[in-house]
Image (cartoon, rainbow, N blue to C red; front, side):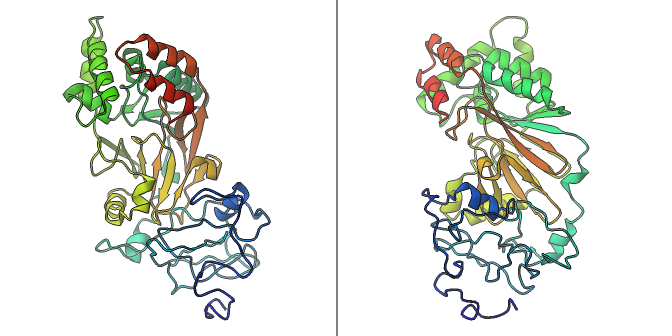
Length: 403
């Protein structure tokens, strides 16, 4: 049975995450990266690995591997009821593909199973040990009925448009083709880019909800803690929005009325973070630096899914503090009954920073979160930025590289 000791199961005490005969995958040279086949297997999307035994990230800063494993179809429990993952801050470990660490409700796999195994991103949304007062299995069970399958509308979530008409037009055109019911904008409609007026007017017309971002706030209140390029762009943007063309009052009032947060069906929308809506970033580095109290507070503030922007880098973070990019899950993530809370950064429409120059946004439909990447005429935007004397040419050059 799975209750056997580590030694009896052939698992090293020094590296409990390594299966006998496994070795690290040389097709994943980057820190915390895996080759694509191994990543898909780890997330439960495929049963096929790269053929190089267990592929594992070089360093795991969040949890040790669960001390019990189950491979698909072997008829064993994924984890014994008494087992639970343990926090391992900064320890090296290897996470075998197919590990499921749900201590609350173990699932059967293979013959005789009561449910069909779901080919989902199984590592996302697992309950994790927490220092939050009152956190218990009772609390976890209480949320069982709060499912994203209750959604009756199809949402497009956009963020960080940054006065980029070409990108915004391409994204809105794509959204029209996806039969979306409502568009929710997470802020930073303006700033950086050369055409704040048309971008703001398009958003005013098409978005059901537009939240305030730090650049929108800076236009109203002044740019503080901005670099020189961003500050000059804000000052120029403020003047552009107030150009006397008969629409200046509507544009200004729209910015002033932007809310900081929006919630519906257990979904929480904010530009930066629930703690500091326009200021705080939620970053991969926070995980590496051990900002556990920060994440405890953030995860305690929403029911199911938190959607943010601000950093311009699309990703999903679960309660185990595991961080995955859209490319690792082929731009699709399914939120199911046994999944708990996740943070979704929807990326940026007008200034992506994940080394991909294409615009990024998210569609949420029932229980599926889908990232979409849209090409647009980057060179046209670069030329427009160069034509504006008060905008730095570097704001255009970075668009070509997606940084």
